[in-house]
Image (cartoon, rainbow, N blue to C red):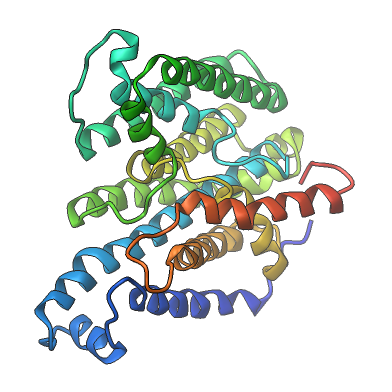
Length: 339
């Protein structure tokens, strides 16, 4: 295992800044770059509407890309390290499936005979998705206390995801078409729905979990070489595993709650980052993966913008288009699935 990183990762912040600027300049309304710069520096623009478009839509969407991409990528890195499996992603524990089940109960509650909400608001959906994520996390933690084997825990997480997905399918079969449509739109993922208040809440949640991850770098480096090595360097296996699972759940749950289930980013970004950053040291990998994930999410959002059109493609369509070839490449190249 090489723990000496190279300076090539310094290119990532430059790429991130470039994509951020490009993202702000794209949209159905053509705003000159000079006007965008004037708005960002606090000056008056030629068209007052441009100010609202830049600050209340484009800036919030770009910041959401930064937060979601970073969080999912860090979560994916932690899962691949903990399970020592190159195909482990942030949703490997069934967290996204738990959120999907909870949100499906919001949109399709009549099918379950609950009649919970007539017109659920954004905060209702976000809160329910969070409860669904942490409900699955609570089950996983209870099981983890009885299991010492991470591979078995991985399989159980996948089975929990399959079970919750089957319940969602039953609700979809029993619900009305308009209820199914509302739920399906949520599953496509969205980066442009958040206002400034929601971004502040999401930032607090994700930064807190991200700091928890940074404090776990020694444990992550130890887990990478196996349970026995981690224990030999003084790592408390149960406590470190709980912290890693908890921070991953917060990162994944926060993004899923506010943006919907976004696929492939957390799975693909750690591998793409390691092509640039030739190291396995998590003190370098964690910030590098966070920057790379934010950059990839900005790039995916740029790709959803249809030139001259008032609508955008679903973000999951683009992330799958980019992430799926990476997964295929991993399977073909690797002689085994362990990291």
